[in-house]
Length: 141
Image (cartoon, rainbow, N blue to C red):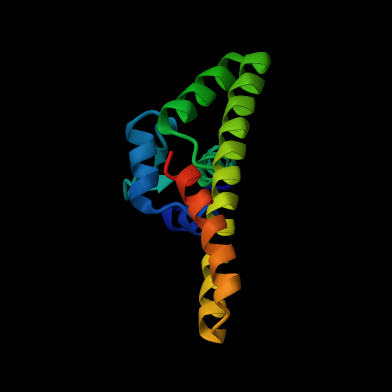
């Protein structure tokens, strides 16, 4: 059987040593085998697969609690519940993405405002200010 060192797993997953140890400590990862002579962690290909999934879930902003729920449901083979978990997270990301798009629109308006100011275009500045003020009110809710 092939084993991977902690450093190899760090490189492949993008997770830090600290994060990998933390995930093991809180039960997101099962106890990793240790080398008998050195005591160093030795990860299996299966361990690496789970770690890569955890890294992807982390990258999506999934909470530790939902990652734990994922592990629990996956171990139980609860496909319908897993689909619900991922659908809820997907919907949350869509809401966050829509919000970020509004932020980008606001910043784009500010860029245009200051370009108009630089060009001395008072009419365009007033138009942009009215639109950006309305969007700002919406963003602050």
